Image 1 (cartoon, rainbow, N blue to C red):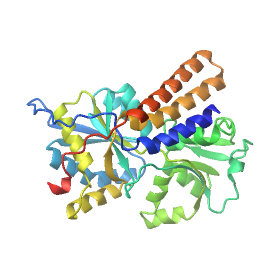
Image 2: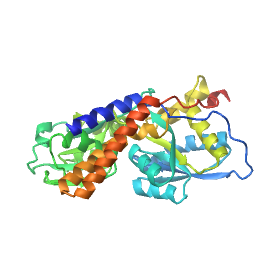
Image 3: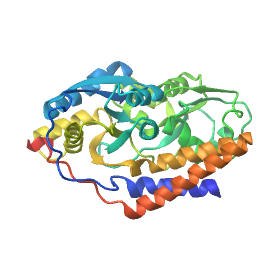
Image 4: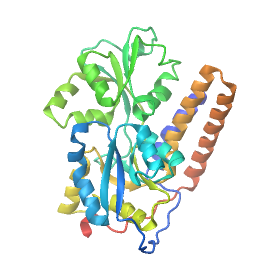
Length: 351
């Protein structure tokens, strides 16, 4: 019953809190002569690592032009390295998944101010379980726990690759992913897709954004034709943009206005910006704050509690239960008090 309650609460929060913020001041900060002229912007690299510069260069160039700052990109697919880089002020702002974004908030003074959307402007994406299109495996087969399946899963901190499948699928069916398969392999969504297509994995986790990216190229479309989805989750929060809470307020406002105005409005310039975002499976960004990551906090607290209960550690059980209770309380408060964050100064296309 506890798991089902958490799942319903988390799913409702994705819809109810998306695009909302607890509070925001609309007054512009006073100009400061000590505002930095350069920042390092971290970028969580999901797939297409060989094309990251090509994908991000147009947006980064526009960011430099609108903010007047020199922007140095820092790419990494490792969740911990992104958080640690912000923690030690090696980066001052960046794009994070919901899981790494939560860590950046709690461990690295990160402050959420925007979240990404889908190209059509909708929020959320889904975790999925994929198999080859010619596979006879069913979802019941995956859940049998008969040690016959070679399974691909995500990084331990991956929201859609690990955390959501555990909470939404495996935990409710009392499946221990560490002890149910013939073999289990941890990797990126791209690696999982390649493994299933090649027949190395019988089944694997991925997400709907990964499948959409496959359709960008003929080679990807050929791979997508060899896959089918056995299971998909309820909506998951998209990625977030954060800056360090101690970043100069002038720079904060420049970044906030850039991201929240980018791709907004009408006309050729707005169309160009939306095309830049679409390459990353994004639409125009929306304002957000810590409340946006409450569904992620609930999910992670649920996994921590389940792991503690499995290991029979009374101290960890008490700690995990306290965190889950706190997350549920915070979610209730946020849902009751959330108000829209202040709008950006003006759409980029109008400048």
